[in-house]
Length: 463
Image (cartoon, rainbow, N blue to C red; front, side):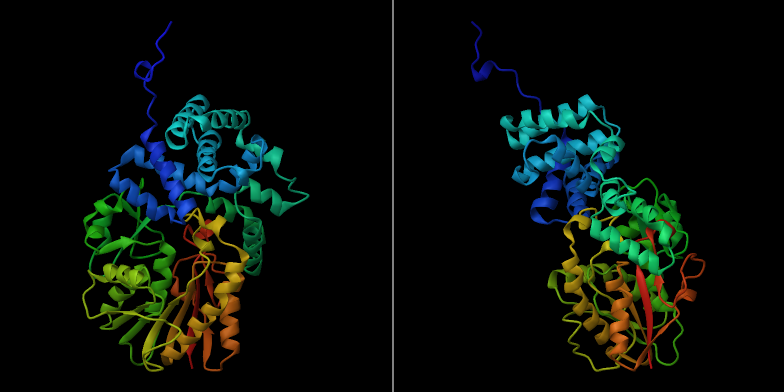
């Protein structure tokens, strides 16, 4: 008779460290409303994970979150009960396994085996059998075959098909199609959705007067196409290893974000040009670039942020910028400064973030149409406050990281219709060399056309 005492059992295999870390990051995002990029970056630093392991972990996390809606539709066909009845941690394990099977070059047997081992460690032995059975069912078809099986026919329901095939909520697809149509880009919908699903590049900004682009290039980056201050870090990696980034003389900033901030700073302005305002400053990336540009004109920047912890992030971003630039904790809709006090004002208002779905993969599943409606009154109030804060002849840049009509032109039209002291100016000439800017006067950047976040800018002059 064999001895089955616990001491004589073979030790259970330990889960793969990279997959385990990826799973725990995903749990923080889905269960605790964490932001994938922030949670992942901290986890990688804490575990001192770099190189191929860090790249693999990043793809596991971002890919699983990005394609969550599609994977849930697949899993609904492979699980015998409704997905909402599954424990949330078990569902995340299944999503993580499905991503490896359908969108990564991972051997099916290895993917299933590793996920069973991870399930034992994270959810208990009793759950591993279900994970094994479900993932084996998933592995019986390719992603394209699953899409054909579960998605409606595109000719019968285009948006429904794209929701499964391109992993975007239907309402987002409809909003993108509407926004593209307004710009004469009716045929670009699929290209935009595909661009949203491409892993984003790490883009750096050399803050003028503090760092030179050559310093970033020597560290392995290449120049961006249009921003004179931008560089792309080839092959990813931790930007903090670059001296200029570590000291705050450079930072991580999407090229589109650089372009809209530079547009405000370089727009022609008659008269005084000494006081600049960033009305919605947190976390401070645009504030740092604006402050550096302000220094070149002997101007000072005031950055306003209502949340104390985000105001600290702004201060951190400004720490390397010379000058008496201020950070105020306050509500931008209730100015504590005199009307007409500033010469240039940036109103980079809180928005849905639908323009940054490449780098915030979880956002597409968190946002709802109600969020758009709830944000619009705040956006209008902030834009109106910005116009009141600027002097006659001064400039306001209304900026969102969203192409949604209700957050862009609709807000500008509503505010300008309510007052007679401001006009929209053509901003296209402030984006030299940038193609496909449409008919103006405002500017909408696009991931599929420009390789940037979908940043929107309306340049408004107070009359």
